[in-house]
Image (tube, rainbow, N blue to C red; front, side, top):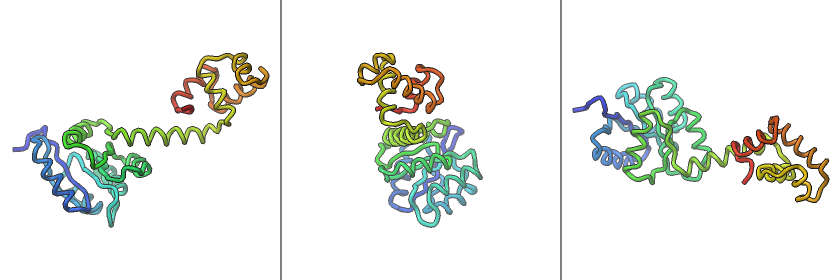
Length: 214
């Protein structure tokens, strides 16, 4: 008997053996119920309207309709359905970015443990974003690289910003780098302008926020 706490799950993967493995796994958790299986995004979209899952475990690379496209369409047509991207492509952060932009509320690799996957499904069902540590790190690195490009700091400016972060004054930075105080003052002014900061303290905060320094 299914109660109100049971989480209905649709599995989407183009490999039958993977879907069968998930089906076996789900039977070990009384609060997780498999309500359907799909071999591609098109079938997943159709089944969402028929079996009404709470959470979709979505493979990313599939024929006919990939997981990113399917995720976007499912979230548009069935906004109450949560989607967890579930993939073995551990080195492709672009897939993670695309899946999250499409509306996925989780991104996991297929080597997670059974208990980790079960907890991730429950968390996503409750509205919590779930990412593997590897994906979180990849996205942070991408964000930092993007920030570096957007702020367009020169090597010298990053060097001076790093010294600002340590709390050194203009005079101390000038002494450390063996340049004039006026040169440091010019560079600090340029840094503040590029960061959109109104003070040294705000510049340091932005540097930490966007991970502009190692």
